[in-house]
Length: 558
Ligand SMILES: Cc1ncc(C[n+]2csc(CCOP(=O)(O)OP(=O)(O)O)c2C)c(N)n1
Image (cartoon, rainbow, N blue to C red; front, side, top):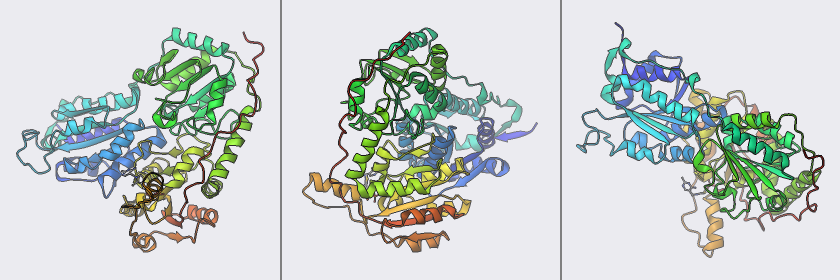
C-alpha cells in the first residue's frame, strides 16, 4: 500500500480545492509540507522574506481573483508574524487560508519551552479569523482544510487558519486510510428567501427615487454584472464604498463616482426614498461614523445576517450571496423598466464633486490624473497608507471590479507585498503600487521576491522623508510638535539596484506620467521615486450645492 505523509495530505487537499500557488516561508516544523511541495511542482510556492508578506500576497491574490489565497507559515513566531496581514484580510472580508505547523502533539500548550512553542496558537489566531482548527492526526487533515474552504466560499469570506502538529505532518499513513475529498465545486451558496425577494421587488418598483449602495461584498461575490443590470432596470444611481470600487464602471452614467462618506452624498440621500445596500456593513469610514442619514426605506442584501440592522435599521433584509440575490431580484423584477427620474443630476453632481477635489488638492489630483491616464483601463492599483492613497480612495476613477486594493484596516506596509500577490493572481494586468517612504520600508526585502520570481509590478514611491500624514496631524492637533515622524531613508536607487531591478528618480511630481508609462513597459518590477511633499490641503472637499430641486416623480408606475 502506498503511504503518504501528513505534509502530502495537506498539499493534495489544497490541490483538490483548486489551489495552484501558495506563499510561504519554511521552518523546521513545517518542512514536511515543503517536502510535499517539492514532489508536487504543480503547486507553485513563492518564498518570501517575512511571513507578513506571505499573508499579504495571499490577500492580494484573493482580492483580484476572488479565490482564496493560501499562505504557509511555521509554528510560533513565524505564524505570529502574519497577524497584521490576517487582521487586514479580516477587516476587509478577504478569504485567506493560513496553513501552519504546530509543535509535536504531545507538547502543545504545555509551556515546557519546546522550540517555537506558541501559547495557544489557536486562541491567538481566533482574533483574526472567522474559523480555525487543528487537525488532530493525518486522517483529519482533509476534513479540516475542507471546512476552511467551505466557510470562506459559502459564508462571508474572511480568513481561516488550520494548524497541524509537526509529528502529524511528518508521520505516514496508508493512503487508502485517508478520507480524501469532496471537491470545492460541491459548495453551494445561499440564496435569499423567495417571499422576501418578492417583497423587495415590490418595494423597488414602487420607490420613487431609489439609490444603490455597493459595498465590498459585490466585488467579493463577483456580482458586478447583476449590480449594473439592476441599476439600469431601476435607473438607480450607484454609490460605491472603497471596497466596492469598480463594481460599476466609473464612466457608467449611473455611477455616482464618489464614496458615500463624501458630503456630496447627503442631498442625494435626502431626495431618495429607498436605498438598496449590497454587501456592506456601513463601516465607520463610509458613513462619517454613522452620522449619514439613510432614506426612509432600506433594503439590505448581505451574506452575513449579523450585518443586517447592526448599524442602520433595515426595512427588509435579504440574506444570501450578493450575486445570487441580485439575480433573484432581477428575475422578480421581470420586464419592469423604471423611467429615469434623476435625469442629468448624476452627471452634474459628479462634475461638481470632481471640481471640488481639484480645488481642494490640486497637486494630489494632478498626480492621480497622471496615473489614471498612464495606466490601462483594467490596471490594478494597490494602495498603502500614504497621502495620495487617501485622495485616491476618495476620487480615483476605477473602471473594472477588483482593481482597487485598499486596506480598510488602515494597515501601513500593506501596499508593496499585496501588489506582488495581486500580480501573481492577474499576471496579464498592470499592477501599480502607491506607497510612501514609510510604508515601503516595511517590506523592502521583497524586492528580492519580485526579482527572484519575476513578479513585475510598478512601485510609485512618494518620498516626503517621513511619516507625512502624522506630521499633518501633529500640525493640527499638537501645535506642530513634530516628533518621531522623520525618517533617515536609504538611497532607494542604490537599494533597488542591489536587487538588480530598475529605478527612476524624478525631480518632483512633474513628469510622473511619462515616467510611469516607461516603467509600465519594463519587464521587471520598477521603482519610480517621486520626491514630493503634499502640503496639507487648504480645505477638504466641501459639499457641492445641489444641482436640482426635488426629483421628478416617476410616471407610469405599475
Ligand atoms: C501597521 C501600522 N502602523 C502604524 C500606522 C500609523 N501610520 C499611518 S500612516 C503613517 C505614516 C506613513 O508614512 P508614509 O508611508 O511615508 O506616507 P506619508 O504619510 O508620508 O504620505 C503611520 C505611521 C498604521 N496605519 N499602520
